Image (cartoon, rainbow, N blue to C red; front, side):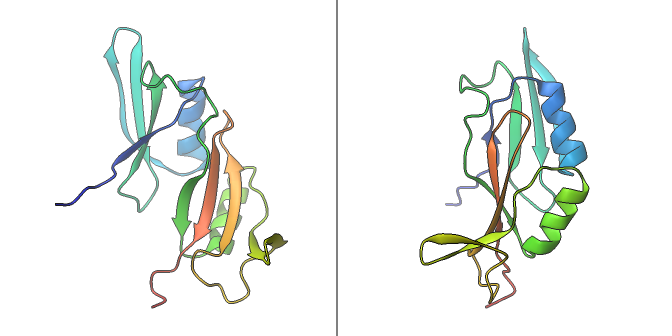
Length: 138
């Protein structure tokens, strides 16, 4: 039996502002924007290359806006992804890795999988992490 994660809900205060951020700044792809009932609306966007969508809207979650933390976007080249997002205006932190329990600027020296990160927040303060994983490396 396959169990496929296909949607993660994030809480936002302004659906149109969030939609603009995820489409324009992040380059996500719109797959749904529809009313689902009186006073309810759901928007689903998907990161390029991902099978899992991000959903937000009105009346779809009781979580506080900005309370989503640690959402990971996996990229094969964190330096290139960081540059792309920065160029698009995303306020992204420095690429960093851990050495003896301390964060050090720059990607992991060997570019080992699961070792390099950069973080950013959406307009509501939901925290995202880029994580480098190059699946072509054995």
